[in-house]
Image 1 (cartoon, one colour):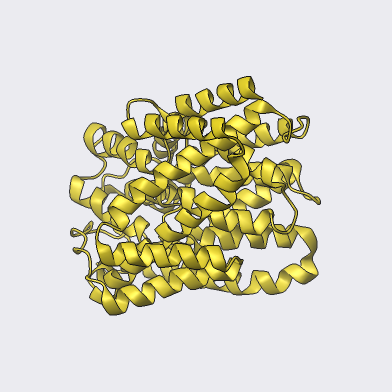
Image 2 (tube, one colour):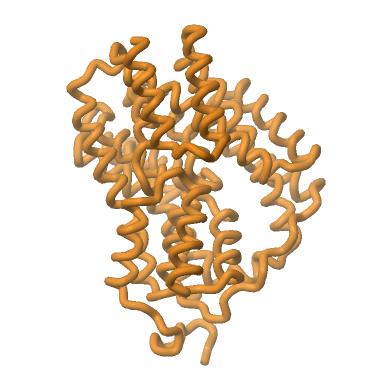
Length: 402
């Protein structure tokens, strides 16, 4: 059978699209804890309980999604759904996993318009929770993505550059610089395990998806000047989703640059929403739904949320469908693995810079705030207290202190 043609459905024992949607929806309602925790939920559900794929295939798909820009845990969900039920299964898995958190955060955004976020004590507590959550993310990611001195050096240089040069282009340049340094100077990580034998996405579909990804990335900035605020909103969220590696917390600096600096969203609104995003299950990229809801000028509300969510998730969807047919060859290329090591270290540095500003500088305004952040971080690092409980505690302490 030609490699470009997916095998018949009965040869892969694929489940139905409805089954994929149902299981993904269940995870979307219960997967608290952010991208790293999602991997654990996926493994228990898809490898241990349902046996939809084996350990080697799961590890291979994790490696693929961590190598691509976009929301890694959501892309992994799409890849698993595609492995089980083809392209329609991948889309069903994406919708099921994303819809619960998107609805919750849009609802929060609609209610936030009736609250003075600058004066609410519980909102200040959510901002302090965001400091603790991002600090934990920096710590955990540095341990895995910058475990040795060369990669730590790349991360520190990236953080310094991000603090001194603040623009949307600077973050792209830092990531590109990390890739170049990795390609020239870093040792390549071990190759990923062998992938699944079958490919469920034809090469022609992969090429079309990659082509559309590139066309939109180049065309949207040119069109936003003539398309008004709807296209400007779409472009901002599309670029954020297209240029961040690892997803989750790493999208924070790009989103802040995209919506706070133009004045569409205030810094208080941004950090309050980010804190609230820690309290819902599912992908952190659903935070875009909140931002689209509260953004100004119009479109905002539900219309703005739909544009923002579509814009931020679309690049990741296109990239995972574009990469699946070619992953076996790409992961065996040593220069790619070297560049990826440098890129991962650079994004740790970008997140470290964002932890300082705007997150720390705008949230921590009194000595007692430091205590709340330290308490929240200690609870998160203990791994004994779920993140939703830590965020709720910070909100309560903020309300009491406020």
